[in-house]
Length: 293
Image 1 (cartoon, rainbow, N blue to C red):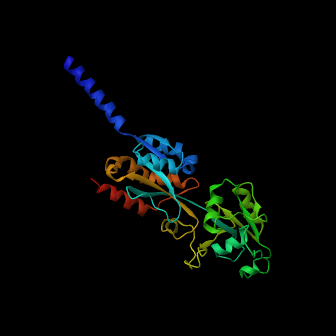
Image 2: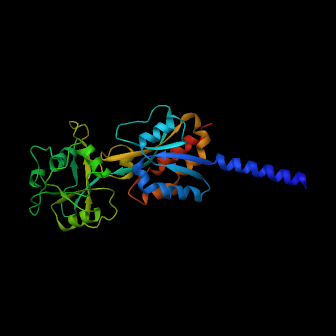
């Protein structure tokens, strides 16, 4: 009996060590944390993965990862930026600013330089009529620009960074109190054009393709904000969030990393204002993890 009791005690100790080993620390972007922190922790716990998630900002998270204070960092990477070479990164999620009009407006695409002339406080001269945009519709006259965001909104900041050369919004731009109010304005006014986030309800709404030409016309092609265009870096008004881990520790973190990259987590991301990484991208990331030793 004593041997059995001793064995049981030993197994209990081993079990507690295993549980501790399976508890992971995640630091990340405060932007993501506002809506994803609690549901992500709950989803991982439901699948037997214990986590301590602290979303205080990308710089804080990256610094903690450099100091080996956390296992994983989920960080925002602005367009054209990369994580330090000592880390492996995997695409995780995206936040987008979109530009939309009423379906009666025949315009299908717009350039960032045109958006600058419509929305920027520094535009000289402004573009304030659809005729000046060569949009052939007699019912369309003065452009009615609308934003849905206040000064601290990440969507507005993303739009200003990607389309307005980080200048301000003009005083003539209408500020809607909410995305739903902006959509109502679009549905009621054929001449309106609005800056939004991810648009789910597209009844009477057309989301425009955007070409990035503020840098002198480097990209003459316009791209819509679909998952693949965003992932490939073609859509200009997107902010990516990437999973970052230390190269030498990635193999030991496979259970957590695979859970962060699987379909269930992607569905959680898609259920809100973010867009998850494409399935093929996530499958590639998981394959890369599988060959790590």
